[in-house]
Amino acid sequence: MSTGATYGGSSVGAGETHVAAGPDVDVVAASAVSPEETERLVTPATPDLSVFGPDIVAKAGELIARYPESRSALLPMLHLVQSVEGHVSQAGIQFCAQQLSLSSAEVSAVVTFYTMYKRKPCGEHLVSVCTNTLCAVLGGDAIYQRLQEHLGEDGEPLKHEDTAGEPGTPGSITLEHAECLAACDLGPVLQVNYEYYDNQTPESAVALVDALRRGERPAPTRGAPLTSLRDVELQLAGFFPVDEETYRSEVDGPSAAVETLRGARLANERGWTAPTMPEKAPALPEVEKK
Image (cartoon, rainbow, N blue to C red; front, top):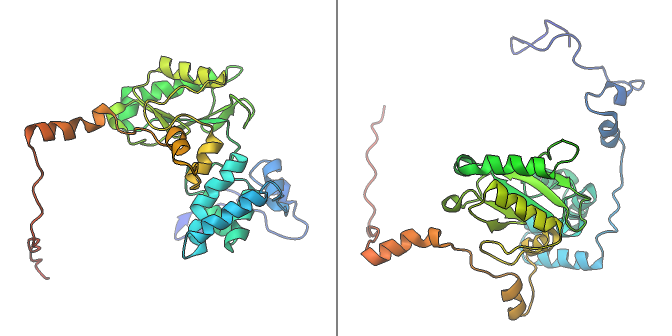
C-alpha cells in the first residue's frame, strides 16, 4: 500500500506499509518487531509439558470435576499453572488447552484479558501498588515511583511487571502498578501476593520490600499471613489445607478494618436504617411513544 491509497475514503499511511508475501520473503527481516520475537512467533514450537507432573494433572482433574462444563475450570486452572511456573507460559497454555479440550487460541484469549495472569516469570513476591485516583492523590504515585527507583539497577527504574532479582528465587520481587484495590478508606494501599498493607508511605513501602528481600515476611495489615506468590496461586486455584487448624492459621484472617466498619457501627449506635423495600415496586413511568 503506497502513499495516496485510501481505506473508507481516508488516506492510509505514507510509503510502503507492507511487504508482499511469497516464498522468497525474509519474514524476520521484514518484521516490525525484534528479530528474536519474530523468530519466536514464526517458528513452530512444541512446549515441554513435563513441568506439570502427575500431581498437577490430578489437581486439574479435580478442578474439572467441580463444573458441569469442563471449560468453566479454565480460570482456576490458570492459577494452578501459575502455582507451578510463577507465570503462564506457552507450555501452561498448552497444558490447559489439552486438559479442557480447548484450542490454545481460546486459552490465550483468556490469559491476555485478565491482569492476574502473568506472561513473564514473577518473583517470589508480587508487589502491587494502587495508583487509581484516590490512592494516587494520597500518595500511591509517589510510592510506586520510589519503589521503581529503589528496586531498579544501574540508575534504571524498574518497569511495570519487571522483577528485581532472579524470578522465582527467594527475595525476588515483581513490581506492578494496579487499578483500584478496593481499599479506598485505607489508602494509599499496596498488596504483597494479594494481601493488604494499608496506609502506606514511600518510606514504609521501601522498608517492606527490603524486609521481603531479606527473606522476612512482615504481617499484612489484615488478612492471611504472608506466603509466596506461588502458594497463593494454589489457593486461588481452590486448593487449601484440609484440616481446620492449619486452614485457620495459614489461610483465614480478619479482613475488615476499623475504618471499613465505622459507618455500620455509627448506624447501629444511632439507630439508622435503610428504607425497606416496598412489597410492590412502583410502576415505571409511561414513555411517550413517537
